[in-house]
Amino acid sequence: MSQISSTFETTTGVLRTIAEKLPISLEESFTLSSPYNYLDYRKALEFDMKEIIPDLFTFSNSSFTFNLKYLKAATKPEGSFEVARLLVTTDKFVTKQNFSVQVLSESFVEEGINYIGYFKILHEDAPEALQIRIPGIFTYDPAILLDSKIPIETMEYAFFYYQLGVTVAQIQAMRKGVHPDVIKQFQSKASDEIESFGFRFEMHEYMYYQVCCAIMEHMQPISYAEFLLKIAGFDIDVRKNQNQIHTVDYMNRYISFKNRLVEIIIPTSEYFQRIEYLDHDGLLMGKLGKNLYFKFIELGEEQKNYDIQYELDRKIEDLIVSLNDDLSSKIQSSLNE
Image (cartoon, rainbow, N blue to C red; front, side):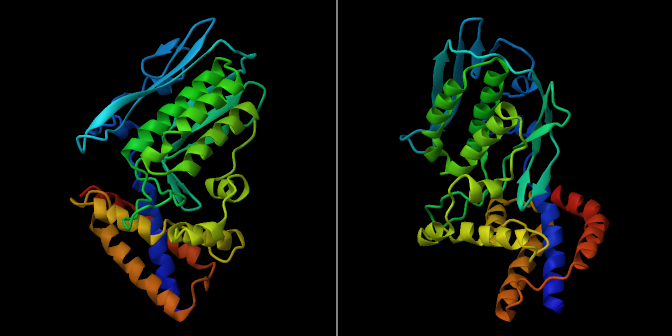
């Protein structure tokens, strides 16, 4: 193995640790001073049998109403917001499924995508819990359609709050036996608004897929990358023609990962570029993260020049783990500087 490849993979391992720590936790997201943080979802996330959660839904023995309140950017004046609602009312019900829901706020990285936790779904007649992954603020989304030169692969405030509200409302509706056709209708109306939240069509559909898979079908949802390949009809050549190179780069890395040509996947350089752009006060990446980010870019270019992008050694995995363990406290303190 060349020295460049070894150093690149070591740097990649530490950047993966940083990527895992970047998304803002559920609890922290409720206290942010963002105009989009208009609703405290902590009560909704308790998943008890409340009959009403203001600005989310109302329920009675004869009807269920999706009543999702959200903010979106107003046309005028620039920088202002307007209140909007998604309303769907129904009296169509099916036999309720008996399942419990827990919210586990444990950050993790899966195939390069960093999540803030998951909904744990446990059916009454099933021994194994099912998981619905939860993306957060600063989660990496490689499938977003970019319409500008500024990379925005980071999931930001507006979409996070909107999508969390949609997903929680859908889970609550399923707990109360709302007919699947009505939930699908609500999803369709929610999808009509996605363009105003940064063209995150695939992530929005993935969240709905996970809910349906875990709750309706009693199956473990597949990963986001697999969803893009198998269900979303994702076409690498089409994205290449659309000049969405950031997505093509990620999918090529994922395919290499599946074929065991690479050991680890992290967000692309565009993701870290956006984080670095947003990190005016150095609180997100910290000094260590910034230094590693620039080293990562530098080594990535050298790798391409030497044509050794997939020249990896399995032994480097032990080195990455060891390095992550040794530096974990330093990384944490650096991120908090």
